[in-house]
Length: 631
Image 1 (cartoon, rainbow, N blue to C red):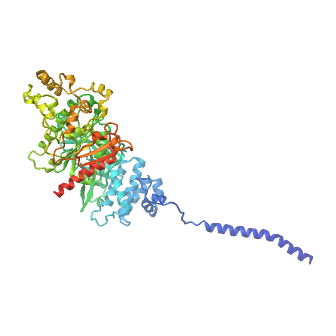
Image 2 (cartoon, one colour; image 1 turned 30 degrees about the vertical axis):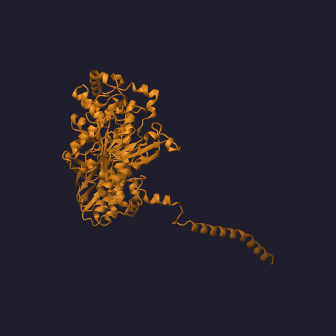
Image 3 (cartoon, helix red, strand yellow; image 1 turned 135 degrees about the vertical axis):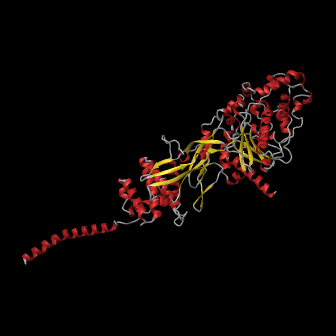
């Protein structure tokens, strides 16, 4: 009994240890069961979306679809360690014809671009462009990708970027459109290029900058029309010194260009070591799409970057104060009218006139918005008037009127283009006063405060008389249909009356043409004139001083019948608009009785870039288009 009792007691003492070990084993098994090899984790939708939509272009990493395909072919690890070998094997896989051709080409385009970015080898950029083009444009069109396929837009973007990088100059700052033999990872490409592609509007295109590598500042919106082709900005150089002076298009203008590298039968050519391609350049206001196979494919175009590139280093900014203190006529040629594009028949000119100590560059925001509006772009073209803002307003207005009249005669000598007879003139500040001088009938109202004698009775040279008549005897230009006044001092600007402003105006140098004419008139008619010396000649600031006879007379003359007039008035702050001002011009001075419309924007004086200002100009332009169709 005692022995049995001892045995039972020993087993009882061992039982707790055995039980603990069993529970430990069971707990370990349970924990292993909780950590499954496959599972999910709840995250925010943005994280999932980034994972699903990220590509080599947006994240520097391969897209999900390309990673899937590399894993399917057991090439993922090899691509990480030996990218060239992985690309070669995937190329061979495509040539075998045993896989999904579209999937293979899409992946080849992306991994070639990735390797090119990592290695800097241009041959892989060119290979990427070829694979992407072959994916997008198969010979028979039967295997064309769906526009809903995310690989479709990715292939377009990779192609565009690859063409840009493959054709770069040695320093990488430009692309060089030229024919030649370009190497591929396997074989080479013979690229044909017609040098006549470099000419546009009797100018030659040079310095092609890839806009995909430009960050734009100073403009609210950046416009790019998606499609195929590498978007570029090119400088259009005049072919002669004479053209630089007389050409209607601004000197050294920047224009948007699209480069297309066309591969005929690309999927067939991939099977060979020698590939043929043609480089094509598409210029502004040319075709917006290109025929590839049986499809009309839109071209990728960006104008905003070209506009910003042109203005970034433009001398126009330095001319703002220079144009106030001294004449710039000798620097700009006989006509101050300029445009960013050649004249286009059938489109209504919108003439933009800047204000005092300003320049056409101040219209950049408005032009960027309006020229990229499809409806506005379809019906209007934009011209700019550059002038010496220190000159007397009647003199500057005479140059404007002559420039517009000459343009109409040059572009439409037979009067067959109705668009030219619907011209819109927009002026900011002093520019608004010049704009008004295109649409009034002054009679002898201006002349009466210069002399009591008729112009015909005064003694002077014929050149002087002609200049005087053009400056003070005004009739409406028959082709101006609408005027828009922006922050315009119809009754003068109180700043013009400040003593400091008066001192500054003494630094203004009037142009020799005006001084010679004035000296001729004064010398022969001193007793019959309101001014007795050249020192008494008014500047633009004098003209805009409240109470000045010129500004009072101009304010009293109405806009001609049949011309629509619109006012955009800037008022700073939140106070009553009738008592307000923009810091330069009061509301009461800018208000125009009888205007077809008036809009007040809460802004300082320089309101050309104000969104409300631009929206109102757009409304007025579209209203004119609707009116034309109704007629």
